[in-house]
Amino acid sequence: VQLQTSGGGLVQARSFLRLSCAAASGRTISSYAMGWFRQAPGKEREFVAAVSGNGGTTYYADSVKGRFTISRDNAENTVYLQMNSLKPEDTAIFYCAAVFSRSDTIVVFSAPQYNYWGQGTQVTVSS
Image (cartoon, rainbow, N blue to C red; front, side, top):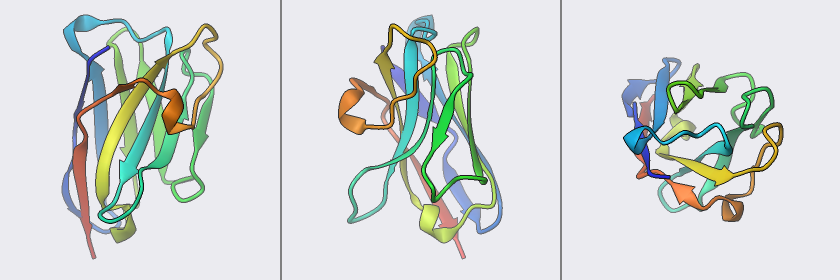
């Protein structure tokens, strides 16, 4: 599955952005658990949010809980990350990822379990 990430940019603190992750060439993603990760300069890649194949189960890192929302539109083969109340510490390159799952209700939050990654999109939050 080839993933195309978009929606990043430069914004001020307390504003919002919506990231998108689309499967290229119309590949269906309904059989894939999806996640968002980020990597800030000088830091390791960290988990942000995950969603199950049917969209009914989500999981968030504590640092974004209550501010970020992950969702998916399987008909459009796209996963979204709505980011509200952005903080300077959210500045990072954001990556979406996918892993095939026989269950459409589980979430995956461990990066090594994902085997498909998007190219990343830069999010910069100024204070």
